[in-house]
Length: 112
Length: 114
Image (spheres, rainbow over the protein chains, first blue to last red):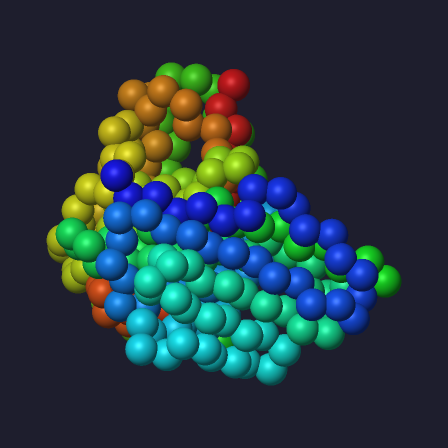
């Protein structure tokens, strides 16, 4: 069956450090992958989409990599700030209907 | 301002009652979705609609119903047949139905059934 696994443990980091989140998937062959941010009690907000032929993509302090051989995407927040504290979700299209499946998310807390 | 609105933010119901959650978008998006989010789980797709007057079941449609009579509106009814309805419900839309297009989410409705 298709499965998406994100860091099960919450991530606590010091302000200014880099947070690295993983998204591993099984039985998907995604042509792209999306990342979302979700604050407590609110709906997710789209951050980035990376295509399978784009090994790396950047947006401001965010960097995403996509390795289809390892079946993994890494999401980096560089020079982290307390305002980056949130839950980050990865999402992949399903093979049968191309609807998005979402991971459970990784919660990041940045300490000042 | 374009976006998606959901109402109400909090909803309390007694067991055995049907309840309808509202979702409206003014983004002129073709596709709309309903998800359910439970603690520690990913978003699970309840229903989706690719176009007006058409909708399909998602992964957990049992106990739910929807309608799409207008492009802007996609209300979700949680019926008394839904065994565990207490959850955070999220409505989303995308310009086209494919998963390639980013989804815009509403603020969510937290439903508590006792």
